[in-house]
Structure formats: structure tokens, C-alpha cells
Image (tube, rainbow, N blue to C red; front, side, top):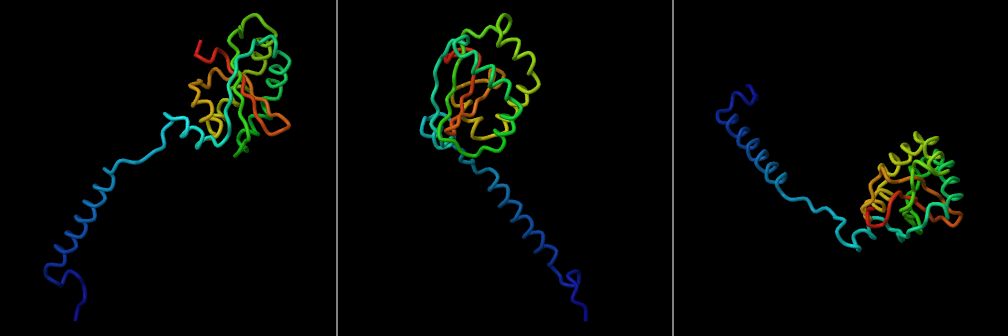
Length: 165
């Protein structure tokens, strides 16, 4: 007596019907739209970031010492960005008058170009930092430096103005 499926008439058809039904169910499941949380509303931004994000504009020369120190610590800060999962506050400082060709800050930026690129990659890889930056329509190429404060707050220095200029 043989119990193989080939010996039973109609078993191949039954198996084909089950496979076809399963394939059809998978096809319908894949067509269902996914519900993703967008960044169009302030509430969605706050829920994703989970931290208060403040913005301000500052003249580059008035914050020169802070910016130069932050750029000097860029390699360490890039590593910290990868390890940070929550923050109390993120402060984004726009530097509308930052001229990369004629200032002390410009020479420091040129010296630390590779570290700044690494920082930008770290920000891009961190949901917390990326959404904070992206929620304010900031391009990563405009991020100049990042500074951790003793109270757990972070300041991100950005080239250009708040309106993208």
C-alpha cells in the first residue's frame, strides 16, 4: 500500500488550488497601503523626535569660539550621535552670515572636512537627529558642527538662514 500523494487522484489539483489561493492572499496583502507617520504636522514631528527642537539665528562671528570648539570635537560628537537615543532639547542655530572663504571658521571647517562629513553621516543614520534636522527643512550638507551641552541638550550649527537663504 502506497501513501504517496501521486497515487491519489486530484491531489495535485488540490495542492495547486491551495498555492494559488495563498498567492492571491499575499498579492492582496501587498496592495494594502502602509500607514506611515509623515512629517507634515508639528505633532508628528514632536512624536518622532521626542525632544523639544528650538531654532534661532546667530551671527557666525559672535558664536565663533563655540563653533570652532564644536568643529574641533566633531569626531567625538559623531560617535556620540550614533549612541544617543533621547535628548531633552535640540537647539538648531542658523548662521546666515557664515562665509566659508574668509573667516577663522572657514579654515577650521576646511581642516575638519572629513570629520564633518562623518558627522553628517551619523546624523543621517540617527532617526532622532535626522528628523530634527529634516523637520526644519535643513539639508545635511549645511550642517557645520554639533555641540553637546552638560545639561544633555544639543546644539546643531547650520550654514544659512532659517528660511533657507
